[in-house]
Image (tube, rainbow, N blue to C red; front, side, top):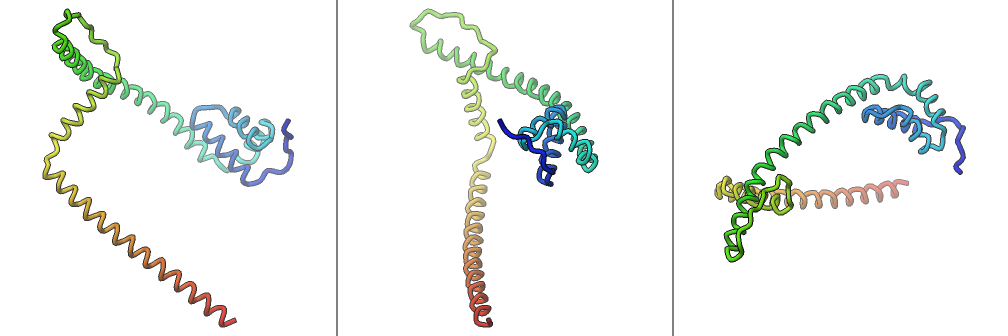
Length: 194
């Protein structure tokens, strides 16, 4: 059993208390949950944490509390927007993937002409194979869209930037050595003057 502290609050503990309470407000949790978390971290009771927050700390962080509440409401709204975006994006991906799986299944059927044809249904579920196939096709299409001259130009620019980076690193190394030498000279001069 851990002992419950009853000594005075330090500034570090006040900062921890404020940080945790503000995080809980931003995340939409309760202050009581924050007091319990802080109490466990600092070996204090949640009641002591709540009293400290309400009596001394909250007044210092009024603007931060208001900001945390705004972020909480924005977070909820953004979470709804993200859910809608994910649903739309998954619909956009499922459709091309479904057509790819149809094409792949047709290819497999053409290869296996010896066996009697089976009617295969195209499932709307994503499979790893379908996703990989889609990404491979997408990557090949992107290669076709970027002209080879641009790729060569980017490679040359990359090589030039690497050379410049190596020069800067070499200069930095020389400067660091000069700085160390200067410090040792100053140290010797200081010792001689004493």
